[in-house]
Length: 467
Ligand SMILES: [Zn+2]
Image (cartoon, rainbow, N blue to C red; front, top):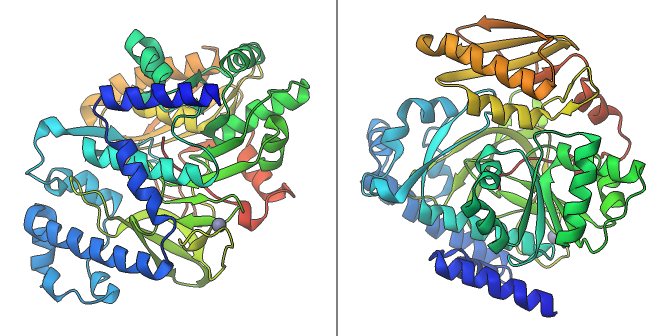
């Protein structure tokens, strides 16, 4: 209890010093947990009307679209009316991002974020600090469903370069300490490094574990194989990829595993509760399910984050699929339950040294190392051959080839690799419509495991979030 109070005091001091509103937002959001589902539907509708009105009066992109289809917020009487607004695609964001920004948001209040391009198309989008604070609060609330409070000490296994760079600066390290967070640099997964991680974790004494599914799985297998016990973990939170190896992760940390679903553009769309049901954060994010021709079981997910006003995303086609369900959960939460049905899958690469390079990690570093790339796909053909497909601006071709070569040599731990570049106008998805940005014909591990692992039921196939 003494430690908890200390951690709480540090976290609150951090929020106050930096004038962050996330904790206040979190306290308000938490109150919604005890409301009725009918009330939440009313709340959702009120927020939706307000957001659509805001878009009409303030966002140039929507003003034009609404005018084109003769749509006025005053006439929006139902969800059916709302669904007349054309969907927003990633391509729309890339081509019209400045018109999607509220001109009233001054430049100083906005910052730019990038995605790793889970669909092979890296995306840049703007967000106000206030929208960002709200997104953090929403994640805090979802984590709290499973016992993770914002002040708990946690260890993070991520490869998102936005976070990893915090380790390079004193200011970043101080900020991590204040956030009660141990960040593991997962760029180099090796047995030696994993032994070092164990020591770091044991001396830090976290009670929550957070990370990308593939990184958690890799580390968990190492813990189990080496019979290493890490005491005191209360929960493991998986994000960014479909959750695989749930059982081994749970065994390794001797704790329950919870899955999160979201993406960089819209964090924390849904989160598992303690009973393992995936609840939608429906008071803050409207999710529509759209039919897929020829498939009656799964539907496309169309998302509208209701709290994002600086760069609103109305009816955003996120690129994932799910099945709505009437399943009731007796955990007491008023939010509806969904079943996610796979989406982004990246293979892991295997180096000739035996080192494994996580596909998600590779995606982040590719985006970070290149300029003007509209689409990419990296294929490991054999232990010594890699094909890189790029759709990029002409003037960056040579620079991008050099950067990617340097990166792949570093990550694969060898320059004895034959890297072939293909510059294309478009990279087409596979026959099933899915696009895999990172493919390994050496491991093709993710897909095989995905199909044959008996511990993976449809209920446990989930995915993605942000941090
Ligand atoms: Zn529940």
